[in-house]
Length: 313
Image (cartoon, rainbow, N blue to C red):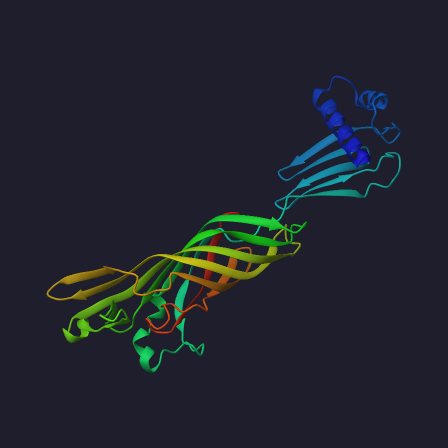
């Protein structure tokens, strides 16, 4: 470590000497010999001192030798000589890790669905009225907070944070939900009985989410880009729910009913995520029923979709 610090100190003095141009490079290098640093010897090969800068790197050339500092999104790399500058061994590298950064915070968009207790996507028999218009049953996740915990490397770690999950379930049949006198969530078929022309009917829910993910990142060698794979659990707290029905009854009308509809207050789910550069996918499945036990239909929600962007990228 002392050698590394000494070399970096020398590098700073050399850069200062070049920029001020008060003394010649040879005089500056000789002046360093009186300090408690690594001895720098001038030789016949030390004929010129040049700098060359690019947007992501700086190169300092001393004769036929050079020192390169490369700064990219993931690492700062110093290619520097060893303490004997008159040798040909110039392959010492030092990598400064910028730490592990996971993929949670951002904006996600996908579609929702239900599974029955047998993990079937088809709603049959008593659950047939819950059949959804899949293309309009969308999911939006706004993950606004993230905290990454590395395991001593920038390629694996834990990710947690906080987010908001918005789910719309559009029913394919002209029905809605209601809670009956026994406190059970049942189908509201009044729109069918009154022959209303129902144009839209949906259930909307909002949850506050907290994840715990284990993430792996695989370097690809393509300008520092990586493939990431993560999986874990998501805890959810329901903070809102409502139904909305748009129908025609001598003019367009809307019915909006805010209630809990016996929806589960707390839930947990499993999530898996994978991505590379602009293509990032997620899938969530909740083994906790959407409605409280014995107070509504036994269905289990899931969502799949795209990560539109991550805030930390």
